[in-house]
Length: 168
Image (cartoon, rainbow, N blue to C red; front, side, top):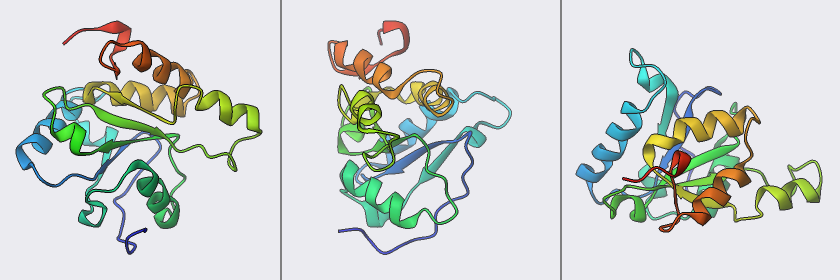
């Protein structure tokens, strides 16, 4: 079920969008936001590079519910190509891996082949918070496909995307 429509924050195409769906650990959430902030593309104005949808109505929501809510609430929003979800897995891990989810649907794709290629390795994958800016910029700008990042995450021993196979 899609929760009632709240007011969404301001958003522009240069911002990675993070939907918070776990509200159980404020310290873990603060750590996630700090990691995102530190990896922003502009030290002077890091908030310009990410938008948080912090709506308690989405507490416990899965990625399908997040996408349905985005579709229902997106009046005035051109949906980003990928969104990030801070869920219970994010909050319960020392790595704080966000779930990266493609917003492309079979109906939105130019053809079935485009959609199948995009979700070849699944419609979602885990990534470190510091990677969301690069993922967002590259997928949004069509420099690198969602499936390329998803494939890299799938090949990682723990299933978490790290740029160039970096370890933590």
